[in-house]
Length: 347
Image (cartoon, rainbow, N blue to C red; front, side, top):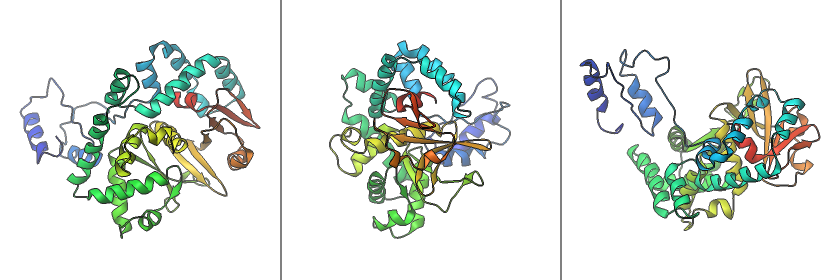
């Protein structure tokens, strides 16, 4: 609807005639920029509610659990009660969380998380997966590919430029990257052109651009390299398979890049409710959750064996969380360690 020429005039006309005095109109669209600009054209016609703008995401992992595995509802609610742990991690809270989870429960959640990495939070993919015994038809991937490509073309952008950028991003998932890096690996000559594409994809909720944190100011460091994540694992599979001509999109998760997809999944989940950055120093910390004048560093390792050489940076902080592929809750030196799948339930 938001690409129909002057659609907003029709809405304004009916609003002025009083058609909406006893009802509401819900205007939706995948392009947040178009919607934000359009809303400025309805002064005094948006009702008296405190909040009239809503941002709808695909299902989070906890919502996915409630939908697909309702027997875990009580466990999901129990884990969410410990969300304050992200603001003030204490031994007492961590011990209570640990005691509330059995290995069998963690195993069930872990299996569901691996399914979530394939389906993401999109209902058509979820329905197809369960209807076809673990398989998602190519038409589902194609639907989302065509949506994104179509919106890019509507903005007078080029499909082959989009493909080039996505190929580069697929090689740099979970890694620091600059516009110069992307330009050097594509035929796109101007950094501003690349920035335009990235901004559009972020406005469409396809990508999340994670900035580095200035620890002294607790503000983003815009001049430092950024990390770019796909906001949903299903979207990652759809676009990377299209850009790289991969026949089976699930290969993106099952055969390579799984650790990077997992990191992007966790970061994108947390950015829904928190300000999230990463730390770029002598080493790197995958995610920082900012809360007031404090921040909590989080390292995401898609492995069961933790190595001190890979944790040097986060070990410098007094408090922190390490998410890993294992199924036990414990400590690595002074830092809290818990399964990535449990971490994903917090949001």
